[in-house]
Each structure stands twice: as structure tokens, then as C-alpha cells.
Image (cartoon, rainbow, N blue to C red):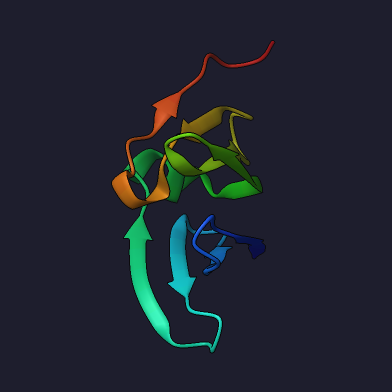
Length: 86
């Protein structure tokens, strides 16, 4: 599991199966976001939270193919798959 904070001060947790959970500062469940089936099948090896003008972004490295996936805004989860690193 990987943890981080959003720009609106919500706790963001990324599970190995590709599910993203958002909680408030007080631990109240806010939202559940699922990744694409590719990410869910390959498992998450590493995840990082970053901040952009669009909001909170998320970068994920898959375990099987070592492929990066990128979302610029977690509230509008549109994953972009980057090419496989040789």
C-alpha cells in the first residue's frame, strides 16, 4: 500500500491491486477509484503522488511489465500508459 496527500488534504492510499481510496483528515471514507483492468491485473509495484495545476496526480509503476501509468487528476481518473522502458 502506498500513501500520500491530495491538494485538498485528503489521505490517498493506493493498494497493490490498483484500487485508490480517499479518506478525510478524520478518517472518514470519501471515494473509491479503480484503475484500468491492465493495472489491476499487473499489480502496482510503486506509486507516487504529485501536484499539478489540474489537482493531485498519480504515477504508477506496474509489477509485471515495469510500465508507467500516469493520471494528472485523481478525481478524473484518465490513465495514460507510457511506453515500456527497455
